[in-house]
Amino acid sequence: TLGPEGIASHERAAVHLYAIVAEVWGRIRDRLREGRRLGEGEVQGWMLSAFDQRGLETDSAPVVAVGPHSADPHYEPQADGALLESGAVLQLDLWAKERGPEGVYADISWVGYLGPSVPAEVKRAFAAVRDARDLAVAFIAERLAAGAPPEGREVDQAVRAFLAQAGYGEHLRHRTGHAIDQRVHGFGANLDSVEFPDPRRLLEGACFSVEPGVYLPGLPGFPRGAGFGVRTEVDVYIAGMRPVVSGGRPQTEPLTL
Image (cartoon, rainbow, N blue to C red; front, side, top):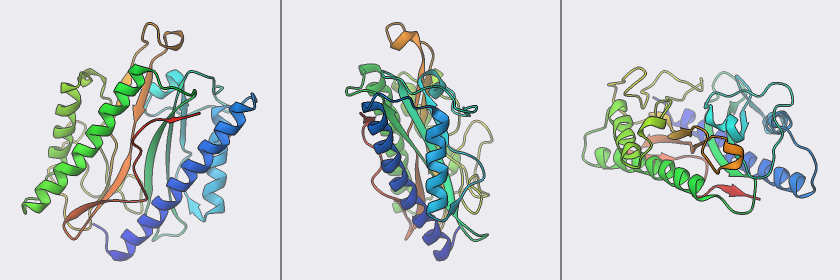
C-alpha cells in the first residue's frame, strides 16, 4: 500500500497522462484531417517525447495499436508500425511515473475511432467495458462502505460475470487490473481471479488499475473484415476507505475525428 506521498506522486503522474492523451489525440486529428501519413510508431514517439518534457519516465514504450492490432492487448509496433487509416479503432495505452526512485506509476488506456461516427459494434463493445469498469469501482465502494474490503479476485469475478452476461465472455484475454507502485505492475493486490487468483484485500492505500477489455476476431462487414479490441483503463487508490479514480474524468465514449 502507498502512503500520502506515494499517492500524491501517483496522482500527479495520472494528471500528466490524461493531458498527454488529449494532446496526442489533437495531433492525430489534425494530421489525418490534413490527409498526411501517420504511423503507430510516430504516435508512440509523440508520447515518449511528452513524457520527457513533463519530467516522467517509463519502463517501456506505450501501446499504439490500430485496426486489427488493437485486438492484441500486448501489441508492440515495430519501427513505424501500421498506418493510421480511416475506419479503424485505435487503442492507446500509456504508463509513466515521475523521475526518481520514489515516483509512483500511473497507467491508463483510451480508445479512439479514426472517423467521425463510431460503428454500432464498436459502440456496443466500448459501452460494455466502460460499464464493467464503473461496476468494478462501484463494487469496491460498496464493500468498503460495508466494512468488508473486497479481495482482488472478487472484483475480477464481478467484472467477468458482467461481461459474460453482455455476450463477451469468450473475448476476455487478461485480468481486470494490477497493483501499482514504483513499478507499473506493483507488489500489491491484483484484480485477478484467473491468471494468479489474488485473495489479498483492497485496503487503505492500495493503488491499482481497473482495465477491462474485450478483443474480437474478424467481423463480416467491419472494415475489411478485421477484428478489433477495446480497453478502457483507469487507476484507483483507496483513501478514507473509499475508491478514488486518479488523474481526471474517465473516458465515457470513444474519441473520434
